[in-house]
Image 1 (cartoon, rainbow, N blue to C red):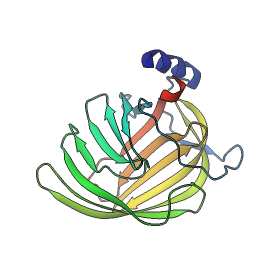
Image 2 (cartoon, one colour):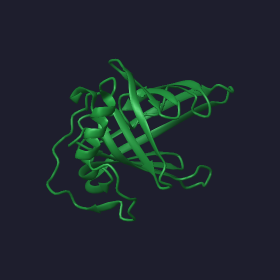
Image 3 (cartoon, helix red, strand yellow):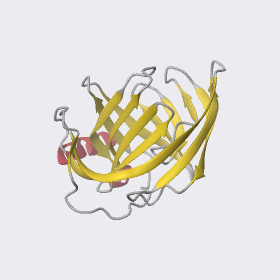
Image 4 (cartoon, rainbow, N blue to C red):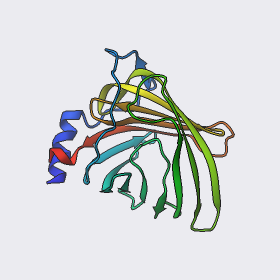
Length: 206
């Protein structure tokens, strides 16, 4: 049933398309109101494409009051808070495994609205015993309309910074999920990452 829904939703949302140079295509068609926290469902699926044209699907496997667990089509499984801006607290089969904690230390995430700010603190260790500890600060920078293979969406543009790493999220209230993501490391230690949403399927609609 899920595969059928995915196929139908892919047609409705415009599965396919190519990567365009103009990621941000202009002002929103109409000002966005505050965006409430989206509701996740077990079985929700997102299909993503990177600049190399590689695609993968991410499925929600479990949801509780605070967290959600996801599995990618390559077998990587991880758990994080239900906020897409928070880093993982447990992961395996993702090139490594590990556990940690993620704490919202300042501000509130929802509802999203321009100018809002919040901070996280992350601690943990991977399965090789390597420990980490860092802080991330996020803000809703602006409202902007973006074009991705799924279609064109008015979005809340959220920027999160942790040291030399800056992450950009483009969250579309229309479908209740992030539709584009980029990550850059000004130190050059990590490769840049860019991906766009190709299809989104809510299990609730199935």
